[in-house]
Structures are given as C-alpha cells and as structure tokens.
Image (cartoon, rainbow, N blue to C red):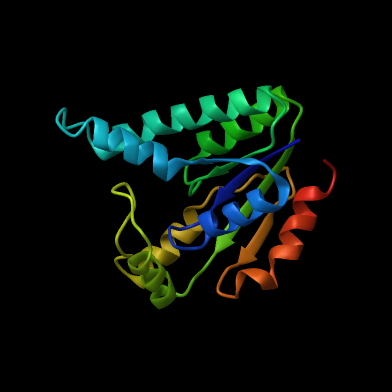
Length: 176
C-alpha cells in the first residue's frame, strides 16, 4: 500500500498523471479541486471566501486519505502542495497506516504551455483560469513543498505522458 502526494503548479499535469497512475495501480484519487469546488458551490450564499474553502477542503481531503488508507487502499492526493502542513499531514498519515510514502512533483516552467493547458481544460470554479505572468509561474514553482528526508520524483511534464510514465510507475512500485 502506498500514499502518493502530488505537487506542482496548476496546469503542470498532476491530475492527468494521477488518473493514469490510478488506472495502472487501482489506487484511489482524492482530488483537492473537487472538494474545494464542492465547498465553494455549497457556500456561495454564505460568501465563504476561497481561502477558507481551501483550508476546509484540505481537512476533508486528509480525512478521506485517512479513511481509505485505514481500509488498506493506496491513495493519491492530487493538490499543488504549497504549504508545509500539507506535506507534514501526508507524512504523518503514511506513517500512521504504515503506507509507503511517495511524492511526485510535476514540473512545467513553460509559461505559454501552462496557460494553453489551463485554458483548454474543463475548469472547476476553484481552479485558476490562467497564470498571470512568467514570474508568477517561476515563483510558484519555487514555492512547491518537497519532503526533506524522503526520496521524491520530479517529472518534467512538457514531454508527452508516455515518455515518463514508466519511470513514475517504477518509482511508485519500488518498496511497496
């Protein structure tokens, strides 16, 4: 059993990769965009701001991860992983359930390609429409949290998925 945390800027290919991993391994995906969008839709009339919805949805995400790992299921958390506590909670849940902890950063530093992907996808209301500037992309890529004491994999997602998928699956299957 494994717990995989995804990370990377919106449009970098996290969800696309997570879906392919789930197809090949049978694991469950907990998608932060879905839980946050659901909250934003539910609380529109209460005018709950996006930051509060983000925090609450992360709490829900980790409750679901805990539940599924507790059932012996492998899980992917699909989120940008921009905060230290998200990384810490993931590591703690993997330890609690004796799951092999994995971390994949999807890295894409091509401003034009990021915006092309963002604008061509079916967008949830919680997702950004476009990246404001190349500097914003660069800054956000640097903000991505990574585990200090665990091996992790960075995939450069400018290439087609099939060019790095084998490496990703081998990384996930190693030691679980």
